Amino acid sequence: MLETREGGCHCGEVRFRATVDLDLLSHCSCSICTKKGMLHLPIFPSEFSLLRGKTALTIYTFETGVAQHVFCRHCGINAFYVPRSQPDKITVNARCLDGIGGPNLQPRRFFDGKHWEVAQQQRIAAGGHVAPTNMNGAETLRKILAACPE
Ligand SMILES: [Zn+2]
Image 1 (cartoon, protein in one colour):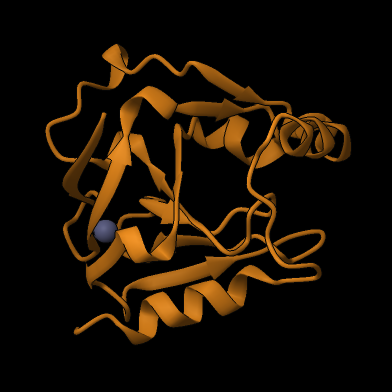
Image 2 (cartoon, rainbow, N blue to C red):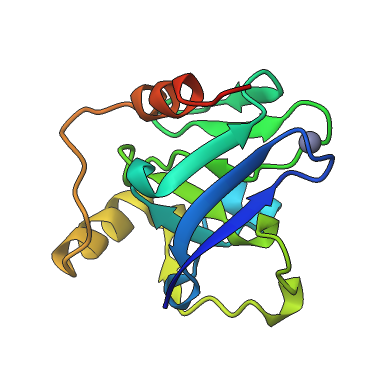
């Protein structure tokens, strides 16, 4: 069910509003998602607003550099990021939504990011969204930051 919720990092410097469907919650076996324990809700940027925190965010990238792993430089929390699999989207970290009971979140979908190329082919074959070719997530992130009032 689609619902509009707010969320943010731990210290409160980063706040966002997003329209999400918790029934589409997914998890991922890639090296960084495993360590973070992130629960994913990928949405189009039109369904996401960064309310505050553009100067609090720091970007971490690795390998291809397509994904933009943004986190709050004060508290270290990744409230959202731009995923490599769909770099024209924003993935909300469901654990950072207000009023969410972490242990009750049950991901129904799985992306085998440990075997990324195969997982991406399977995701697209199953009707998943395809971003423009050779797109870098930095482009998506730039627009989100530019639209942030503070
Ligand atoms: Zn913070």
